[in-house]
Image: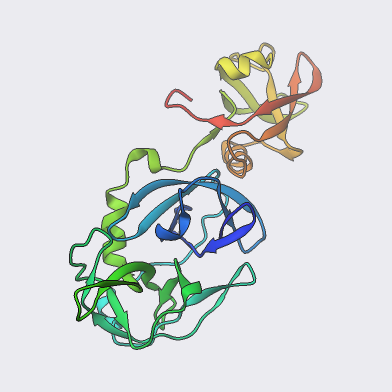
Length: 281
């Protein structure tokens, strides 16, 4: 569920294995102060990383990479375009199963730029307003389209707003055009590490210190006699690079974390603030 100040706006689709969220642009207003409310009840700030007003698509970038499990896109949407599809709706501030909908294939729609939108999918009955941003899934549970807004031509020449299905092929093209700035932030604490066994403790020796870490008084070096060793992050032991990265990726930029550090034969706690990694980190 996508929210602003705790108020539900619409649904979003987590890109499986990626962590970013695809949804409809029109329900996001000015795109500011947005949160993603996940099924585990965690709420994470998100920003609009990429948008296509004509196709009513938005790519949202969460502040951390904790939630990467999402729905798989169908390889091709065409085979399912005349078969019933499952939908979801916003109900009580949460995502819930919606009605089964039956496509009629592409129809006479215009995009929000007034130009013909030939790929837009129509349905035998109007889609529920609460399904904006919903994935439409086939019998295999794969996403074949996302519910967005378009403009339906009328006999009098006017154009009425309508919910349509935007096929995964269009969504893929949209994602390919996303700028590099639409990437998930890589959390960093401003230093580099390597596995170290001091004989009394296992952890990660600090090998390089950037400006943020230098302020914390962390020491880098070629061995445990001259360098600090990170033993735990927020109470979780970190003995490999993988365990350290896993513990860190659950945090958003700006989070405060506690490091248990071994240096000069003594343990101490160091409070650090998570920042976005630069290419140097």
